[in-house]
Length: 102
Image 1 (tube, rainbow, N blue to C red):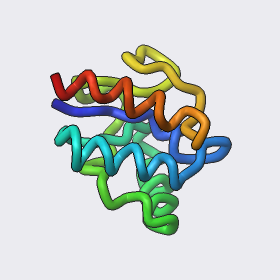
Image 2: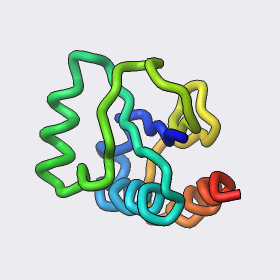
Image 3: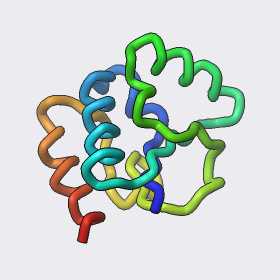
Image 4: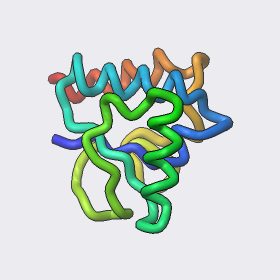
């Protein structure tokens, strides 16, 4: 199963470090594929941004909008709706992702 994050969640006002923590947890402990979803013309920008901050380690692929099926995290049409990922909601996000382990 894929866990698909909308790309805006890795940029401010989200914490890129908390975003990395969530992708690490998803990949290593929940053992799901981590995909980042954005518009086709934004793929290179997000790749460079994540590599520069060391946050690309646990992302399996950057995909175009609505190309894959899976558990979605983001603002629109998401299973887990979020505006940002910060230290204030990190526990909430991880608790919600744990349902994928069952």
